[in-house]
Length: 460
Ligand code: PHE
Image (tube, rainbow, N blue to C red; front, side, top):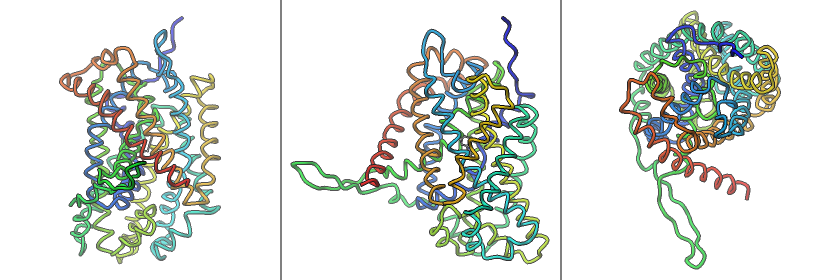
């Protein structure tokens, strides 16, 4: 029987735009600065860069291989007929995607609200810290969450070409222009230099932690070691921001033609993603420092962006300009979040289509509805939201990433055959294989065991 041809990207650059659209989102502009502040500044940035190159990029290439090689959604992509069946991992991806989208949509709802309130001027007349405290939880937060889920589901209903590819092509360049523009403005503020210093000058003592140990027969003692907490935060952020460890890149690569160079695509997507995160750090830290907001951020790291940006715009005295800038900023952020949310829902949708033989419409609506319901508690509690971000947005992604590295590195038959199709950058194959087989699993294992130990410690 002839198989119906699978939908493909419209243009060569369409895939890169869509993958960048998935990668660039709240992770770059909200989460990256928030974690950097939480873990003490530049030392975190440094570790994040190292992990991005040594672990994130190899895992991304692995996801591309799985997606393009199978041409299927994540659950099916993990089955090699007659060889291996790791479809259980695919189900974990679907659960992770659902878990992330459920609270991601709540935060994206805040950006939607901030866009409206910029236009009406409300946002520029309130105390940004108090305002953030008021709006983040409650029934209106829920309403915006519902609204955002409707938008996301609407795009996924439209399918790959019309929905995703077209919108991202316009949005990403617009977002970059805005962040850069704001960054230039921020650099002229008094005190901006302190922000750059915090962001760019690593305090290496942050990298080390003291661990108290107890060994029976020897007693209590303490050792200093690379801070596993910081490492875990940075690794979680790497996976989150690159959309790795939950099948989004598998799904998008499944629509990719055979002649493309997968390593080259990995470079494009990860550098674009890193560039935008780095740029938003260059914008936000000078703002935080020149307006003396670092303590505020310390009180609620989650709110760093939502407090610092309105505070900055309030300094612009011409209302129409401050309202306009604030609107454009939050609207662009909303759109960046939307293209990421779409990729999260696409994992759930394409899996439902392949597994339960649903059509796109039923699958997208069921997936959207599930995320909406699971996200309700996050709309009522910041603690819940933060916890969901740690569990689904860090822990589960790292578990998924570890399993992926093991599967493609050790179990899958001949991943390099698929990799070599269309490959121009041949000298990267060996280092890629080495990083995927040895470094990525070992590092992820160490980081995950720290997660588990912390969890146990918190329980008792
Ligand atoms: N990468 C997205 C962001 O940075 C979030 C995301 C995570 C999207 C995992 C898809 C999968 O906002």
